[in-house]
Length: 378
Image 1 (spheres, rainbow, N blue to C red):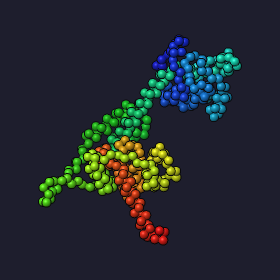
Image 2 (cartoon, rainbow, N blue to C red):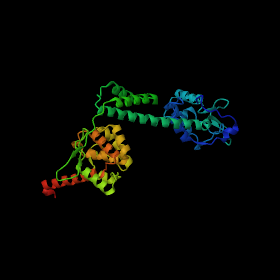
Image 3 (cartoon, helix red, strand yellow):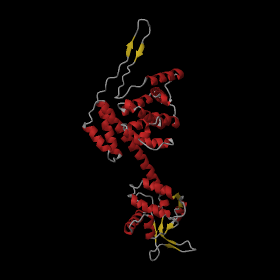
Image 4 (cartoon, one colour):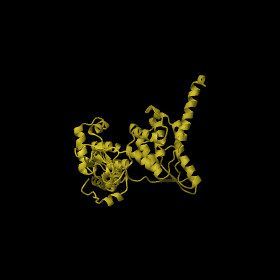
């Protein structure tokens, strides 16, 4: 273990430490492997040793959790790892203080029948240092989440700068693109994030679209006439959606709320996914895995879909992608269209219901047209 690891001395103190679950502490050590200078092969040797411990829990009492497999048995459990490699990884585990040796006089590993005496590798140091291992793993998990959030924000900032007119060949955009391909520290990500924020603030803002006022001689009051032209390189929001949202606003006095779609209903009307995948999703979890593979196939950037998940919810976002897939030939820029829907969702102006209804009507119309052209099949 590292020098910062707390050393516990005294039998009484060791006995006072609580036992730990052997698989939970192994998972925590896997998360913090880099911090403890461990690689995946050393961890696999430790996992193999743990499998020889019958009990689920590891106690902190010295020599209380001894396993005694031979090198040949360990090698077989590790799918034929050479014994020279195995000895090297065992020595590293001992050197780091993750396990300790309890050797017999001839350094053989065995246990005496009818006796509690055993010689081999003691796993109790895992329980002794469990608190330090788990706290380190938790810190690294939080750091990983923060770094992932920064990476997502950097991707969004790059997109916003390009929407403001910055060319993709700009040195800052190229540098940030290269850096995102690497595993960066939080400091490096923060530095790049700050540079992009400063550039975005300095960039000239595109003029906001002014509201056009129109009046008729037969009316005494003015009304707002909005443009129907989309600001994205995508299709316009349909009149069906607008009428549905206006209806929701009139009924509730607020913006339209999201409705959780039924998976069966979505899959009944959205069947184009079968052109890409042979399996049928049986749950939302299956659909999310499928959408993760489908999104880049149809030209939607992964950060754009993540933003849709945050604003719409995972189920609504996944269903929306399936609806977009149904109308893909009519949508020039699927990514831009999903961005526009996400912005409407942020304002509470998006619902999946009109998209599902429109697809149902289109499906019925297509069936009616087919029957009219082929009356013999009716």
